[in-house]
Image (tube, rainbow, N blue to C red):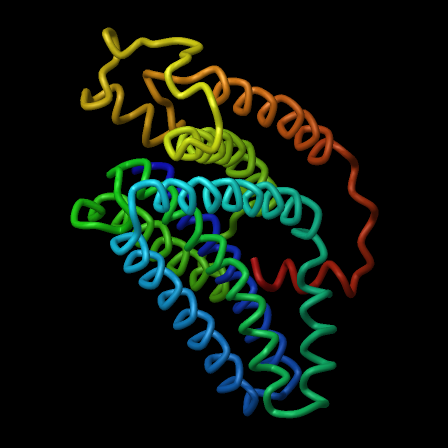
Length: 289
């Protein structure tokens, strides 16, 4: 699924860039002996995210249908909030993330051995947690289950996105390729707004199925006779835009109420001229890219 691939690619590239900046700064500042702490932190963050993913899958199998829908709907809304925060954070921090991380490394290197481990855990774990929640929500949309037996396609798509991001991050670090990160995060951010809107709408649908919200059988439109959920077009639209042939009024209102203001604010944010960066702030981003 393209949506999961995009999530894996963007989140993975963010995490990879963060690790690249941390590693590059330690190497260039003559503190290569501290690198094992970074790798310990990265491994710990990955382990925690995997454990949460497995835990959500096991929990989903043991709950009643209503409980699954309540938890699934709530986590979908939380995932949409995470994506929204991520989009705007990266839009503003892409130009200064290197300077911020260097400051954190300097402060942590002067403290206990766990300081740098914690920096890596928080930097990578944030992206990993967002990926976990979004993947879990998108997997339920694609298969109707929480990490059950038919989740191979969305999970593989996300893993392919992460693998691609790792390769790109390594090539960027080695200087083999050059990517305009500002444009990359701008375009992927705009696409992810529609992904997040679909996740939000599906969360609303889950809560309607659980009986928490009304209007389950009140449709704003029903085009299932033209675009069936199992057709190639329905699958394509579902995978890219989280489109549902049968959309309730509450889902449609939530989708529009999210996309219109968020997309407007995002466009204004990316069009806003950036403040001139000092040479010290600009250097890490060029080095990482």
